Image 1 (cartoon, rainbow, N blue to C red):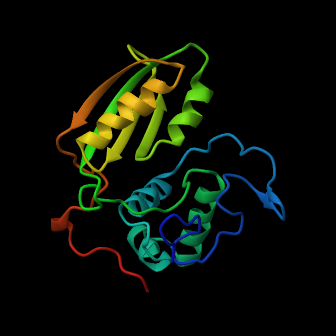
Image 2 (image 1 turned 135 degrees about the vertical axis):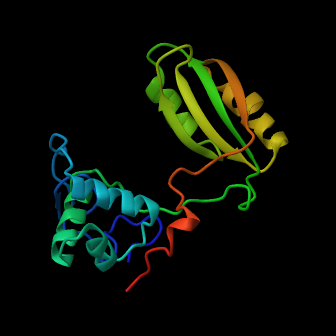
Length: 193
């Protein structure tokens, strides 16, 4: 079974090549991963199943995609080794976890400062997603904070004190829908063996 945040394949306790996105040696990754490989329909089904339930057992995955357990195990390990699957994680209800205020924050930054800004944004408490984007702004940042006061402090004190940040715009999230969440009418979830 893969635990939250683990890079191991479900039901395995570890993947032969590690979850580094490429082959591993005794001291870590060996070279960069190869070019992306096209996924066949079975691989895409496996990815969808694991997105819905990263704790699914190899047996459950194999049964649902109609392949042997050995084939499912090999495919999952290849998806991990190829960097398609980057890990297994828990989906969190941020409000229930005490993070009741969420916002997307757009940032305009100094040209060629993305790497510097990205490293500073990674250190922000509650930062959940950072993306360099095209359009009217340069960076899109998703944050979760306990309340609006904390969000205000994050924007006015932390973000605007970064010298490379030229301007920000905050978009409060009023309601979210998790598109990866399992539809309750679809029946029982995949269980461990």
